[in-house]
Image (cartoon, rainbow, N blue to C red):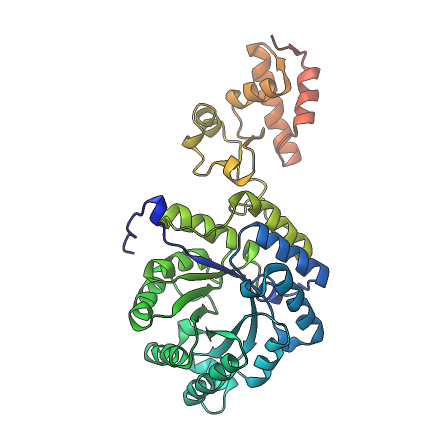
Length: 387
């Protein structure tokens, strides 16, 4: 992919983050948020600096309308988006929420159109031409979402985008609904879209092939102005592009500003994980418990001299702390460091003895040794207080 020009901090491109945890994230199998959990998640999203909250689907009924209305009050109606199909009925439901924005979705791929619309591609264009102005007449600001855009005919996609712009939509969402793109293809398609429209362009990526974050960056390189994400990648099947990964990668790799407060990401992930009743993988990028932990002896030896040798990200920036763990791959540098942490000292022979005991423990218990367990081990080997 072509390298994005480097910008100074004062001229960083501003990418708008649209979080869909409360809509697409909740569509993950078995996930169902209570109203109280939705409000808690909305508060956490705002604290993390999210620009737009896609709060749900009003057409699902009165409870959803009430929840979206309250989220609009919490977040500000101008920052809250309702989601619906390209129908007058869904527009009417969105109007009941009092929010300012609605994202109206249409299928773009032939397979999706055939399954949903009897009239075929012409009906897609006709619905856009009819429903978007209707929504605007009702006082809504309209985004158009292109479901399964990545499997749609390239020329028809341009017709859909053109129809959306002509009808008065402000943004077009390109959805990689089944996660079939690669970053190079995402870059290329957004360059084509960017050349064809002055609307805002958003990428909505799924992670079926494990490339949702990379595809989102590819789309931004190609001209996307908005990114649609979910906290911890929550969503259908393999999930969506993860808010925390996308926000950090956009800043570090493309020098873009998202307004996201990195120090709030771990807390935000915990709020969503608790509500979804899904554990966060310890190795999950950015928010996993183990991502700033180090065990390998070679790594720890260098890390203790210069953290940048094995840390591309500063844990303090994320409200986290570096952790040197003791386990099967530890070396003498880690033992010395651990002794210093607990304020103990042993002679060199006992350092070797402790290292052997730590390795034996890790193999036997299949885990790292906890600080309290190490302190007890040191006591049992005859430590003396550090000078």
